[in-house]
Length: 293
Length: 279
Image (cartoon, rainbow over all chains, first blue to last red; front, side):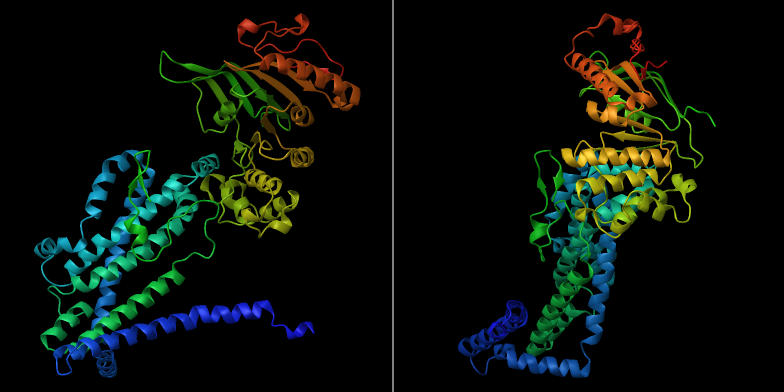
C-alpha cells in the first residue's frame, strides 16, 4: 500500500527537528561533559580550581538566580549595550552613507577609518577614562567605538550597491532629495544596515565585559572581578555562563528582529555571517580604490 | 491651453572639455502637439536618448531652449526608461504609486486613480505581486503605469521595449497603440526599430548621427493604414534609415534636404500617398 510508506515531508520534518533541536542539545551536553572531565582529571580535589567544575557553577547559578543577585548587573549591562549601540548607529549610519555615497569623502576618510578600525577598542580604555572619568560614560564610548564600524561599513556597502538608475528614476519623478532618501535610498539599504546592527551587537557584547572591569560598580564584567575578589569562583563560573547565554539569546533575537521579511532582491547583499567574520573581512581596497565590504 | 505642449528650438548638446568637444546633436528643432505620438528614429549614437533625457529634465542643453507646458495636473513630462527600474521591495501597486508620494506630483492625486490605472494597464490582478514575480512585458507595463499615473502632459519613452524578446515586444507595441488611443496620451518615443516607429508613430523623425540632426520627418496620415501605402512608406523609411546609418549622403535628389547645410531642419518634400511632409 502506498500509505504505508512514510511521507517524505514527514521524514524531512523529523530530520529537521533532529537537526535544529537534538543536535545542538547534544553539543551542549558534550561540552559540559568535557568541562566536567577536565576538572575531574586535572584538578586536585581540595584545590580552589575545583570550584570551576560545572556542577558547582550550576549550583552557584541557581543560588544567584534565586536571590536575584544578578538582576541588577544584567540590567546594567543591557542598558550599556543599548546606549552604546544607539550611539554607534547614530554615528555609523550617517558615516556609512557618506562613505558609500560620496567618492571624495570615501577617498579622504576611508584609509583613516580602516586604520582606526584595526585598533582594538580596549586600547582606548585609558583615554576613555581620562576623557569621561569613571562611570557609565567610558563604557558607552568603548562599546560605541567598537560597534560603529560594522554599522558604517555595512551601510556604506549598501549605498555603493544601490542601482544609480533608481536615483535617476527618482529625479525623473521629481522627488526632492529628502523624498529620494525616504523612498529609495533608505529602503534600498535597510537590509544592509540591519546586518550591520547585528554584527555590531555581537561586537558590543564582546567589548562590554572587559569594559565593565574598569571604574563601574555594576554589570556582568564588574561581577566577574567582584567574584574573584570574594574568592567566589563558582559565582564567576555562573557569570560566564550568564554572559554566554545572554549573548546567544541577543544574537538570536537580533537575527529574528533585524532580518527584513522581504530582502531587497536581485543584488548582492552584505554578509549575514553572525559574529565578527563579516566585519573583520569587510574593509578592503577594491580595484577602484574605494573601500567597501 | 496651448496645443503645443513641447517645443525644442535650436537645441545642441556637447560633451567633453573645450577643444576636444564632441557634439551629440545640434540645430535640433522639435514640436509636439497634444495627443500626438512622435517617434524619434535613428541609429545608435545619434543623440536621440540624450535629447529625451534633456526633455525629461535629467540633462541640459548647451544651446537652444526646451519649452514644456505643464498639464492640468501640474506635471509637464514623465519618462519611461528601457529598463523597468521597479523597486524590488515594493509590490506592483506601490511601485505604480511611487511618483504620487512625491510633493511635486500632488496635483495628480485623485481617489481611485491608482486602481483605475492598474485596470487600464491590465495590472489589477498583479497589484500585490512583487517585481521578481513579473515577466519582462508585465514589468514594463508597471513602469509605464507609474509614469502615466502622475498624469504628465507629455510621456517620453526611451526604447521602452528594447530589452524585451521579439514576441513580447510585438504584443507590447500593439498594446501601447491601444492604451495611447484610449487614454489620448501625448508621446515622444525613441527607437532604432523602423517597424516599431511606423506602427506607433503619427509622426516619425529620422535622426542622423555625429552630430545628431533630424534629417527627415514623415507624417502618417489617417489613411496611411492602407497596406500598400504602408509598404511603400516602410520601404522609404528603411532606405533612408540605412543611408543615414551608413553615413552616406541621402541618395534621391528629390527627397534630399533642401536645407541640409542650414541645420537639418528640412523635411521630406516628396509627398507620398497617405504621407504628408510636415512643417
